[in-house]
Amino acid sequence: MTVMSTAEPARPANGTPPDNRGSADHPAVLRRMAERTLAWTGPIVVVAHVDPDGDALGSSLALARALRQLGKRAVVVMEPPRYLAFLAEPGELSPALDALEPDTLVYALDAGDPQRVWGVPLDQAAAVFNVDHHGTNTRFGDLAVVEPSKAACALLVKELIDLLGAEWDAAIATPCLTGILTDTGNFRHGNTSREALETAGELIDHGVDYVALTDRLQWRHPRYFHLLGEVMRTVRYDLDGQLVTAYVTEAMRAEAGAELDDSEDFVGLIRNAEGIKVAALLKERAGSVKVSVRARDGASAQRICLELGGGGHVAAAGATVEGDLEAARAALTAATARELARLREAAVADPAG
Ligand code: 5GP
Ligand code: MN
Image 1: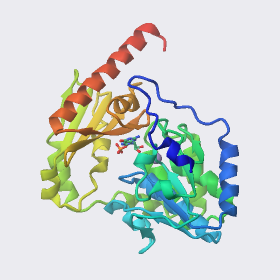
Image 2: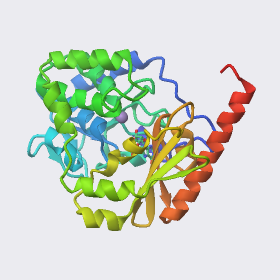
Image 3: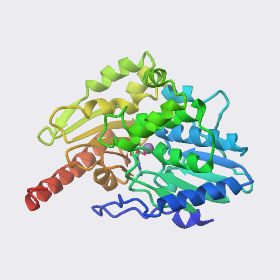
């Protein structure tokens, strides 16, 4: 099992530019993946990253449904947040597995390294196929297709499903479109491409109820808005107004209701603060802080988060920092200051650039 050789992800050292190039042979590897999948006789388990988002769940549901239509035994292992749970049929998702059956193929979607894959013992897989769009992906697995130019992992899954020869219907197209919608922020983020828009159009043609889907994806628990109010009270500007942060404490979440795991998009609100280059939401967890970072104007959330031991995309990345909120804020502010200094130096070196 080659996944073991990558159990220790080769993280770029601090300051080393992550590899945001795609694999030149991606169409060939994707074809090979499709061929091996069609020939696979054992069970297939589809998983994605911890704290799944719309791309993680949408990509996984679309692929597993296509595989089942083709007669494969395929299951998604995932516990989605409340606001996404409507996408899955009752009983369609499996809780985490302690063990894998012999001859199991695992598809790891939207996950940059084996440690971020949630819910399966990867080392028990007969084969691991890695399909992702994070530049910080360690290219783990027996076959890996990593395309940072793709707005969503769901765009790669769309290509894969075409290669598998499954017949598109609304049940497959709806979660696939969800991945594109959520990772592009409903076509508002900088990763929105002609490909994303065209693929969305194609998926809508397969019977997606677009209006109902975008509406439903934005529903939040009634108490969410109380939590939102508390979190927005913590908004603060640092580094001459170029960094905006807000935080969520465990007490705030407990007050709002423990089942409220819908706070993921708060950072999407403060990223719109005028004049900022970097936005971050700090989420207190037991003993550590999850940091969600968004960047614009040439600043790289990815570089900031690599410094903090995490990863992600240039415009959107994350990390988990040990310690309390103040320690996490200090580490984030220092890493952001270095990134902004790098930007200033780059502008001096290449004023036209
Ligand atoms: P979010 O801030 O929404 O959790 O994550 C933003 C992006 O960065 C997502 O694509 C997510 O997969 C990635 N990401 C978040 N946290 C981590 C992390 O700790 N490590 C890595 N490698 N990627 C992360
Ligand atoms: Mn994604």
